[in-house]
Image 1 (cartoon, chains in turn blue, yellow):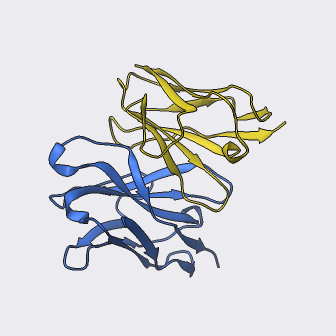
Image 2: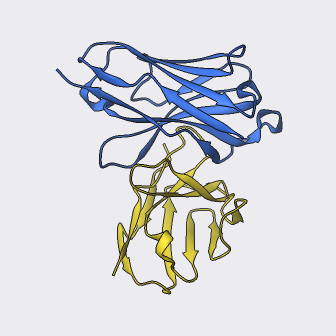
Amino acid sequence: EVQLVESGGGLIQPGGSLRLSCAASGFTVSSNFMSWVRQAPGRGLEWVSIIYSGGGTYYADSVRGRFTLSRDDSKNTLYLQMNSLRAEDTAVYYCAKDRSLAAVGLNDAFDIWGQGTMLTVSS
Amino acid sequence: DIQMTQSPSTLSASVGDRVTITCRASQSISSWLAWYQQKPGKAPKLLIYKASSLESGVPSRFSGSGSGTEFTVTISSLQPDDFATYYCQQYVSYPRTFGQGTKVEIK
């Protein structure tokens, strides 16, 4: 079964750091474009970051310079390192997989999502 | 950034109704548009990709249309399981922006 499972969320003080994980099964993360999407309480969806099959990354302006997306191919797992956290980073964080294989070379819709992990930034 | 605007924000409808939600992009995105359904406390679920292609396993009462800057998703006969929030998303460029969502409520 194709599945994504996020972990690592919690309560952190402003200015702190946290690392989220997204473990994949049923497919190879390095063969797909993989993203993180977040949703603040009661709000809509916000795309955060992407990692390409070659390992390159891209970030939303709101997190660029503070968040780092990486991948461990041996563990088939993504990591989102979040530094200098702010109250406005409070959200459920989802990892999501593009429909198409990276070899196709095109962006695609997100066909598989994890269940999400909650990050709360508060003193 | 490409802005995605959905209308209406909330829609009240009854079981059996035909429902249409509109999504407008601030610039042309060709057909690089997806629709998602989200229920409270759950992850979004892909319904439509490339503006009009139905994702595997999604009921045929869902359909998508449009290209360029204006898109719609239609539910031909609303079912109890369809009461949820719907989001459009463009994936032609970064950031991959979402619409603000349309909540479909029971009338």
